[in-house]
Image (cartoon, rainbow, N blue to C red):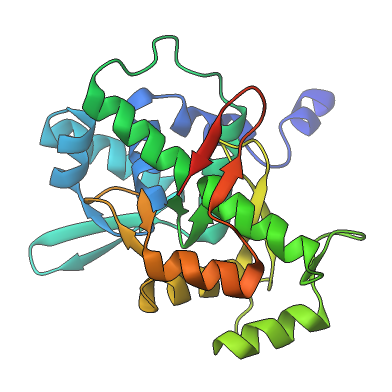
Length: 246
């Protein structure tokens, strides 16, 4: 009996896995990677389920600590609990098997390609664009991977030139590696990743495509990335995929 009890000690990983073992709940978490708060009605419409079904699933996700909720009047909004939860979802997505049937309709194909080119992962940039920025920062000595990912002194100076000053009050790590589920390579997360994404939106470098996670790089953004990081506007994904333009 003692051995059995000892076996049950520690984190209940099975309970966490069970929360994501349902397709509807998993689709909710993937949708919430856009970093915004959604209503139960919006998520129900997104997943193609009844509002009452969505509410049941959301209660489980909130109770399990993956989602946080807030109320404004009669409306209930939910979002991913924190950046660490977002990183967990993105990492699991990168490890998950691909769905058997690729999108066939033109709108679905276009949505898939747009997400692969550039998207938000909670509050930082992902997709080919996010990976390209991360690799360009590494090549320029702004990031160092020798003993775990760190922001270099040159990186701090580079951020200051952009007008980005990290708050000393935040408990969030300055930089963190997040495995990109489409590129299968890391993109930049953490406080720096979030600040860069916010700066890109505020400066008009990127703009959202519709209401989803996909973003498009503007002409202003192309010029800025060429000036600040030497990016030419063309990225190559893992072979044998063709070059992706943004």
